[in-house]
Structures are given as C-alpha cells and as structure tokens.
Amino acid sequence: MDMLFQWLFDYTLSGQLIPWKFVQPLSAPDLLRLNIAQNRLSQLHPADLADIIEDLDIHQRAAVFQSLDAETAAETLEETDPKIQVSLIEGMNPADASDIIEEMSLSEAANLLGDLSGEMAEGILKEMEQDIAEDVKELLTHPEEKAGGMMTTSFLQFSPATTAGEAMEIVRREAEDMDFIYYLYVVDEEEHLLGSLSLRELLVAPPEEILGNLMDTRVISVSLDEEKEEIAQNFAKYGIMALPVLDETNKINGVIIFKNLLEVVAPQLGK
Image 1 (cartoon, rainbow, N blue to C red):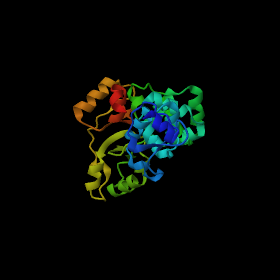
Image 2 (cartoon, one colour; image 1 turned 45 degrees about the vertical axis):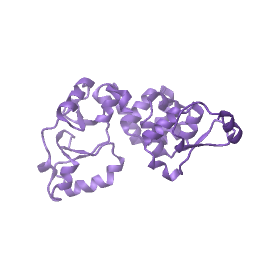
Image 3 (cartoon, rainbow, N blue to C red; image 1 turned 90 degrees about the horizontal axis):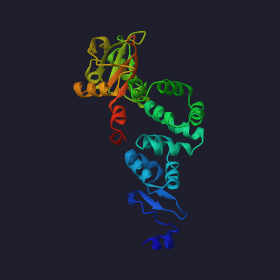
Image 4 (tube, rainbow, N blue to C red; image 1 turned 60 degrees about the vertical axis):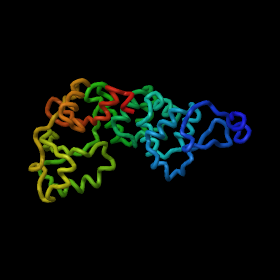
C-alpha cells in the first residue's frame, strides 16, 4: 500500500491514522489538503479539525492550519492541545498570528500567550487591536489556576434602568463578540454587581420592564484569588453555567465559564 501511494501520488504514508474522508494527498510531498471547500470548513466541528491537526506531523500540521481562515483557525486552536497551540503559533509571523488570536475567546488567548516566549507574546500583542490587547494583558496578570486567570472579560453587563427591550437589542448587536451571553449582569455606575438574569428570562420579559425589576440579587460569585477547588465546588453545588469574579470592592472583573474551569482541573477533558 505504501508503494502504491508513493507511485500514484508521490506521497509516503506516515503511519498516522486520521479520518481520510476529511483529507486528500497532493502531489507535493508531506502535504495534505482538507477535502472540503474553504467555504464549507465551518461545517466541520473545530474539535474534529483539532483531532486531524494533532494527528499530523509538524509540517503537515502547519500546512493544514495555515490554510484555514482566521475564524476557523481560532476555533480549532481553542480545541487543540496547548503544546501544539504553541508550535502552530510559533511557526507564524506576529501579524498573522495576531489575526487568529484576536478571534479566540479572551481567556483562551491569554492562556496561549502565557505559554509563548515573552518576546513572541509581546510581538503578537503589539499587532493586536489595542482594546483586545489590553484585555488580554489584564488576564495575564493573574495566576492561571486562580479565578482571575480563568475568567473572561468579554460578557454582557447593564444598568438596572435598562429595559428588557433595550437589553435585547444590545444582545443582538454584541453577542457575536462576546465569550458568554447566557447570563446578563446588572451593575451600578461603578460596575458593582447588583444582580443577574438569564437570557431566557430576558426573552420572556415584557420589553418595557427594567432589568432592576427582573434581576435576581442572589448571585453566587467568587473573588479574584479564589482557588480552583472552591470554584469547582460552586459550579457543582449551584448547577450554574458561569461564575462572576469580583474584586474586594464588589466590582465585577470577569466571568468564569465552566469550560475554562474544566481546562484547569481536567485538561484532558477541557480540550
């Protein structure tokens, strides 16, 4: 079989097992191409693309990854083993790498940049949009295994005077750029957490009702330096999908999504 492939396609099988319905050999040695049109890549789950990339050797891996558009590459990178994430990004120039990392969730982007060399990370941050770079830098100041290092700063917050109709318009406009939208957080002018409500509660609320009347003030939260064990216990005890992270003044700094916790306490399941 190896000789047949070498003769027909000028390609030597590496002995790696991957789903062949997704790839086809090309005439160039050591190169594979996804057997899917570029505009159909989004139909393949990022976790499947990550599995394919992880099963390839370093040259094939880079070739396939760099053939993806920035959004698909970012989604795939989030599902890939951290060591492979680093190798893929280190093989790119900072400008191209920044285009991909900007499409990642803030917490995932911070974790990846934290695993890169200081020089490489700094070069990528300089190429990123300033507001995104500042958010990522803030996350990088917190230890990865504490609440501040697990949180994302990309979430929705509103004043209590905002009506349900107004909030729904903001959700429609900004949801695509948010890491998490299932819960909406209600804050005062200084971003002190007052309460929260779910997206479902917003959808069924009268459009004219203000969020201050809809919110639940019994919000479970954690501090910036909370340990992973306590965070996990809160998720398990209360059956919630996310935990707001507060500083010592009760100001909301970010939100921990369950997936981010899983990547810390059980990395083999989180990716």
